[in-house]
Image: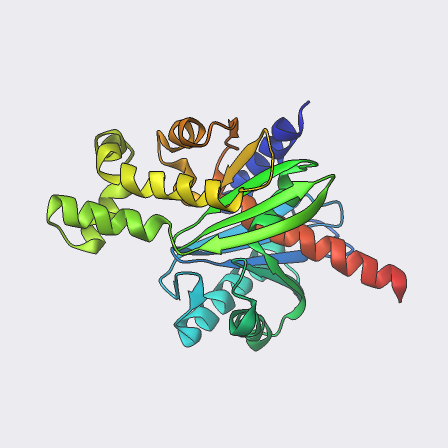
Length: 283
């Protein structure tokens, strides 16, 4: 089984736990990954083996271009998700991690940490989003392009180590803007149309300039680096035609995992497990 196949199996397992029954039973420790994104807040719980136990997703508008802009509602959303996960799993949850777009550490990292601490969680780490995704994908060499609701984050990985990260404010919200402008509708209506599977093919010519910009951003950040693999994650990457356009525009083989929206939050939970486990061993 290839690394991507293993990642897809793990992601599929999580998808079943998002809406289905959680994994119950005695857990020595449960690790949380909380992804406070532009379009959604997603919390994921994994066990000591890194297997998904349960997850929650809530549509939200508490982040803009990678920065938290509505602290109060972010706290409320995360609090409700943690309460729901505790009820579903039948246990208290206390250890968590989160992630932010690369380059937003100053201020944004502290705010994100404060949100988790405000709901009673011990924050193990705040990492960058593409690096979190790389933990799920098991990449030794390649590039992760994380296209979220507000930003495009890029991590270059060599011999299993992240050697470069970058981020720019282009993502799913820009799709909403061009759809709204092109069709003469509100941004809210545009967002709803963007999510309709039967409309996405016809909308591709409208949103193509945004995807071309993402490809241009990727090429710029890869200047001076050589790679033969791009891994796409983030909800925006699920838009039909995007992966093919990225491959054509960059000239690099593109890999798209199943349900790319869930990759980063799962990776955050795995980072929590990894770092907390090392801390326990060192204590």
